[in-house]
Amino acid sequence: MTSCPAGHQSVSTDYCDTCGCPMRVVHQSATAAAPPTAPTTCSAPQAVTCPHCKTSNHAADFFCKHCGYDFTTGSLPTTLPQAENTPAAPSPVSVAQPPGACEAASEPTLPSPTAPQPPSAPGQLTPQSPWPSPPDPEPTTHARRPAFRPPNTQPAPRRSDWVAEVWVDPAWFALQEGEGVAPSPGPPTIVPLRNTTAMIGRTSASRGIHPEIDCGVDTAVSRSHARLTTDGRRWWLEDLDSANGTFVGDATSTPPQSPIPTGQKIEIDADDRVWLGAWTRIVVRPATSTE
Image (cartoon, rainbow, N blue to C red; front, side):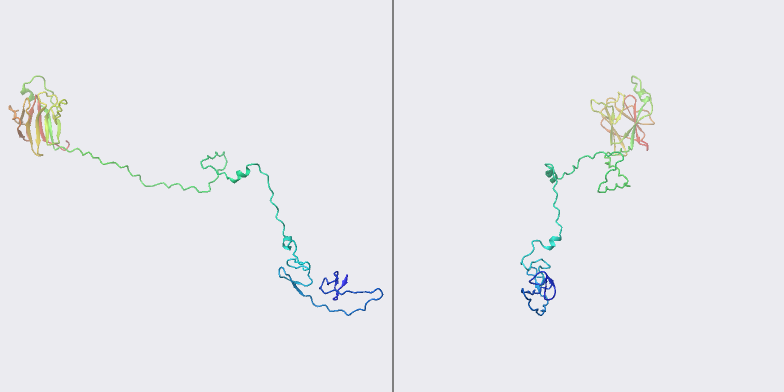
């Protein structure tokens, strides 16, 4: 090992390993050594710029302290210094899979929306739904509306202002001197007179005769015997060509002997009575509040 002119120990014989100063070559003869020369003062080391990364380095450096550029050979190192300290990432380990596993993994299986859930065992917790259930509807306090009912289109029965009393008159039956026995007298039959006309007679279904004042079983009364008409305040009686005639008289006198003319309207008073057939007597009067 030799020393540079500055006194540094250096392995290299051309330049000092420490300061880069040129080394002095000492030639010694076999017989005598060369006279010593005066020591030479070494100049200060100079800076060297790396041609690769432009980093400033000492003139005595063999490599760039930043990128490792070799100033002697003029080449870069095969591996950068930064990469030397970085650990290599481990390679992924491949796991052997059975055939068809890749196809099954590429198509995710969606749960069927209609698939029934198995019943939970006793004591097993039921999984909670991620969505909150809607609140229960509040009980309504409104009263239920009644069902609609259409109005009654049928008119109410009109109150009758007049009625006809149909009696069994034994005195009239005795005056006729007819055969058979008259029915027992009793309370009269009250017939409301709601129309302006009312026919007196006996019902005949075969002939279509339905009188308003039906004299029942008195066979001496014709089917269409007589007719009553009114203007609302007064009443008139007309014989309809009956077989036995129609008789009119007041309540104080005895029954008349002659019938009224056929086809003529005869006004009847409030106290008049109408006789016809074998025992029938009819009285027309205003209706009471209960009739």
